[in-house]
Length: 413
Image (cartoon, rainbow, N blue to C red; front, side, top):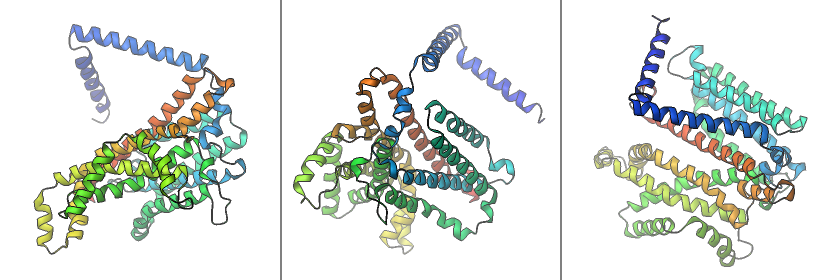
């Protein structure tokens, strides 16, 4: 039976494709036309990418795209931070696979992990060669990739030997690593200060997006609870804030934050332009997250809170332990969708004079040496943003599966 199973699956797949693509004569003609158009477009794109496109603009400005005007003599901090992130990612990835629900070596490396490792290997080997990076930078990238896979293998293989007390503390590694990263990037604790005006490129985009995402979520939860509060002042204050922020375009709020905030606050208390934009993004996204969380709160039956209160739980504990877990599970897709929109909204920072990834690309394309190289630059930017958005989407779906009370993994846990 095991030898005939792949044949049965292949036959059923072929029948399904035949039914969906060639169910009738009209469907067959449309399918052939669309497949021919897609094939022609794909061949044209690969012909342009392999033989006509000039990728030298990316190799010559790779550092500028990555970190902007960050001082060269201090860039070792960023390499250290990337190494720490690779180590933490590999450990987290391996620990998630160390408890797959069914034992066995194969469960530690499912098919999706093989594909992910293969894609990472191709990128780690091909990108440094395609961008014509220096040998030292190539060795660093290959070392970081090896560290990621080594941590993944070690955590997946020996994760079960770690005591449960220490495993529960492992999620605290990520906020701690974020704080360490902020110190490495900006300076302090004996490191040379690097002002935010020298940050740029992908570094600034990721930093602004992560800062806003991490802070807008708890702020949005508080606003959603405030909007459903029985205290009139708290409820109407939350309503006014949410409706005002949602009714104003983000670019308008960014210009207000850049221009008016500097006049309202004294000179010593006015934050840097980068942090003004970061707080505007945070407050803007919090209003939309609050509405997503409020939809989850509405979806939770009122009897859940009443049952928790009847068991003697005070209101704060009833909200934290009974209502919010159910509401956040319902609101998770909409919340992650807002996070993805927030990541894409960081491209507006270039309009207020910050050299984020898009602003750096415009600066590069304004150079007379690289005129006419717009397609190559914008294509790479699109791939970078798409990769980040896909990572958020995949993480969201994985979290939904783990939080689903009807899933096999949740029932076994």
